[in-house]
Length: 417
Image 1 (tube, rainbow, N blue to C red):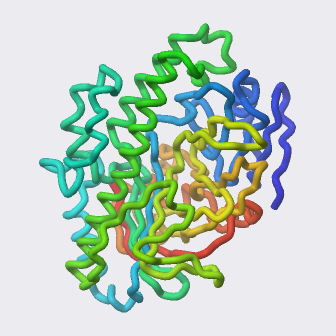
Image 2 (image 1 turned 30 degrees about the horizontal axis):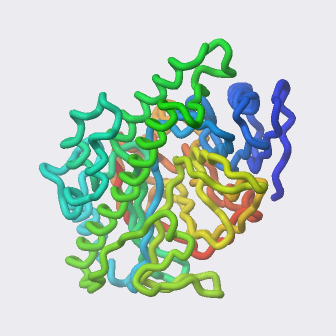
Image 3 (image 1 turned 90 degrees about the vertical axis):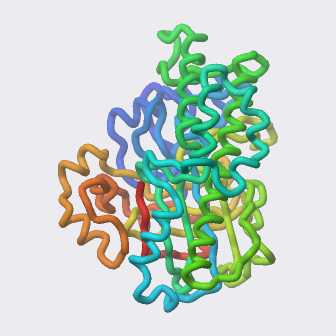
């Protein structure tokens, strides 16, 4: 569907919405606050998976002139997705799905767990050279950051083995900048609030840094570092996942996965290409942020684009839109819709808080809704039950003017934090 221009009382800028459901009072208040920011550029774009967040909604795209708002980026800086298409069909997984899930859980720490010491290329990552220039209050966190690089985390982060509609096996994961990103974000959010008279802001959570100030420079440096850490985190996990896959199923793909966000425009890995028949040949990889800031050109101006729960969907760029742990996911190619600031949704989006999901659903409900998926089916992941999320099919229908689907996936194995 095309976007709707929302009629929000008191809004000072247009809010263009791809959401198909009505917004409640709190959601409208968040959008009104964002629309009143003096640094806002043009309008606000609301993606079809949007839901309540802290300070601003998740599923929001904000362009700003000469300023960045750290709380709208949030605390999981650089959170995003990575997917790799393998050259195998589903038959290779026969009678080995439970075994492979446990192999993944042994190879990659989840939840609050970390490695005993840094693994693979984590200790050689060039980002450590800039660690001493990060916020002074996190300088004692380097060792923790090193052993967490290449780990999943908890919440809605996951590792999946999926099948597409042509029975091809895909490896997919969702994670961000782990604890170091959270600590950097919290410190800079506090600094931003200290620079403003909070009663003069639309909301205290919308405190911003102004380009050219020392505080802006410090945040931009740390933001960029955390986004690179998140990208590397996904690369290391994916390489370990591929190694586990190789050990169990004999895949001889020796090329390590190194996919920056910029190169996701082509989506190629070791010679894979996008085909005209809306499919991609293996091996193929894409790695994309959905919680980040980038400098981009829109409507003829260079601006800061914050995507809080949204991905870059410029013309020809590949991306990943996952559903819940019992629903479909999609590999997409952007259409470059200018009104969305070349953006699209980052997933299905929650329709129910974790607290409400735990109160409403039981383990038996979880088992029914994840039937056919090899995954944890216990109290610890009830809040991630598919019923707590929006219908991914409806979300995709709402953004057909933003993206083109190139592959449709369904998970058969899901590892949660």
